[in-house]
Image 1: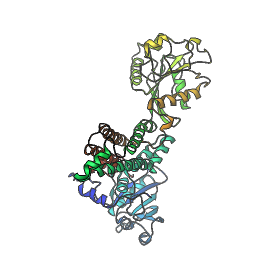
Image 2: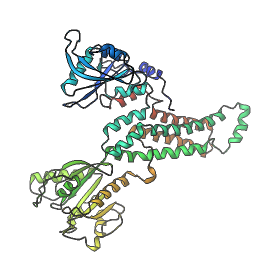
Image 3: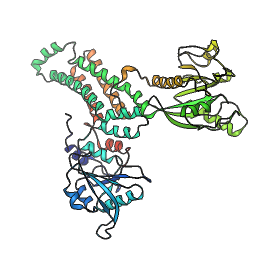
Length: 505
């Protein structure tokens, strides 16, 4: 069973939190808070979250059945009306609602809490205004999750996964975030930390010997590092976590793929085919696409920002020339270049001029229904296209030539697989990398910090340095891991982190 963080940590935080001195609300207080947790605008239903000691009593002041609400046990729902502000003056009904009651400590925040299901649109704004009259203030971004952390309901890694889940762009991203929300990363961090604490305890045991015993202890420990095997295991697990960041970032943030090529190569047709809808205008006239067009799609769970660009050529038309310049800029920032070759015209020197050294590229031989790939250009491995292309692209640059027909859709399955494979290769994802992954840059930096401190300890041990030089390195590694879960934290860091959350979370 996972231990809850002592509630006094929240009190300690509030005592050390800096005073903002601007009249603004701070996370470091026990105010009653309220926020609409659903998107604004017209909708059938909206959800308003409330939390804080005394929140049930305060909500009862604007509820049509106050006694029923006050007597309701936790995890129950009460039907009634929210009354106009202030209820005693007008007593008008604002909206018919269902109120879910959660009593401390069995709630998301660990405090007395309510969730009001009301109608969307202007009705939710009226309900929120009534609640402000009864003592609630608008919640700050992430303040509900902040209170959940401070009251021991979740660690920091699980708190961060809340926003990862909200922001997920694909089902794979959602699944990874759910894993962290359920505690798989927390468990892995705690497991590694336990190994390091065991090593630290063994190391400090030798340091605690009296002077008379020190020589005997030193003789036993000569050339050895207490707990070396555990330390090395912790290092391997930290290294695996560090490497997971690129994989997780790919599924969270996605990648930028740019479709480029000479005019009339079929770029816009391929763009439309990948999206499954007619987004780009397609004609036989070269230069139809003047500016870039973008759309998001999911490719094997990877969020892909796909961009169709203007045909790459020198043009006297100012509008087309500007489009080509923008296309070139996009090529520089792309994670993946899908370069389309007009199969009817074949590979030309102009095509080779646009291939970027070091840029992961998929070459599409389009119009396969009209022109087959010449034998001298066929290959199976990821190697430079030809001796001519080799001059333009250094050896080792990933390039694949795929047959494709935008007219018939032939090659679509292979193209999607190539896109996913190229992006995973770029992110360094391998089969054995499956397992707990890091969800934020903060976690990545702290894991790297812990790994660096541990490696320093192992290097010192390898040089037979004194244990009193090794122990501080181990403590630094343990503290870095404690920052990931929130056992070691400071007020400024917490406020900065939770301020990036949505209001209502």
